[in-house]
Every structure is written in structure tokens, then in C-alpha cells.
Image 1: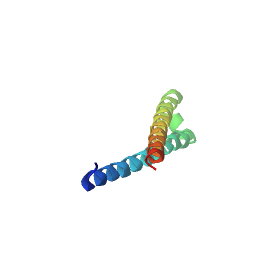
Image 2: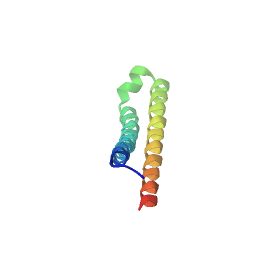
Image 3: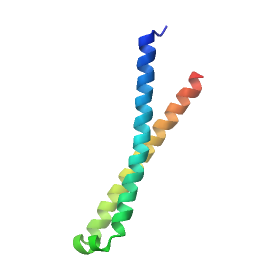
Image 4: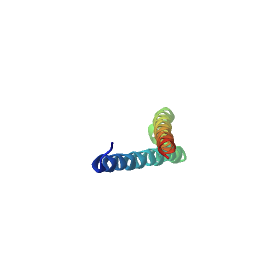
Length: 86
């Protein structure tokens, strides 16, 4: 039997997980927008070279996709938990 304290702790943890998954999604989108903006700046390519700019932009994009995937999986997990609990 769950006590009030255990239920409160579970509710708090679920809120933190929901916030974290939303943050992962938002930061993933941001990490994809940054390289798109950087590639639109021709002076960056002139100053640092095409290879360097493309490498950094691709790393940012991959990390952004990883963050979006992690947030998406966490959201799915939370939704499945809510369906089972109802």
C-alpha cells in the first residue's frame, strides 16, 4: 500500500521527468537551428574553412537529433505509464 509520502514523491518525480523530456525536445530543436543559422553565415565559412564549419555543424545536428530522440522516448514512456495507471 502506498503511503501519502510515497505518492507525493512519485508525483514529483513524474513532474521532473516530464519537464526533462520537454527540455530535451526543446534543446534538440535549438541544437538543430544553430547549425542551420551558422551555415547561412558566409563569413564563418571564409574565416574558419568549409570543412571545420561543416564538421561542427554536423556534430551539433547529430547531438540535436539525439536530444530529440531522448525526449521523445521519455514522453512516450510517460504516456504509457499514464495509460496503465488509469
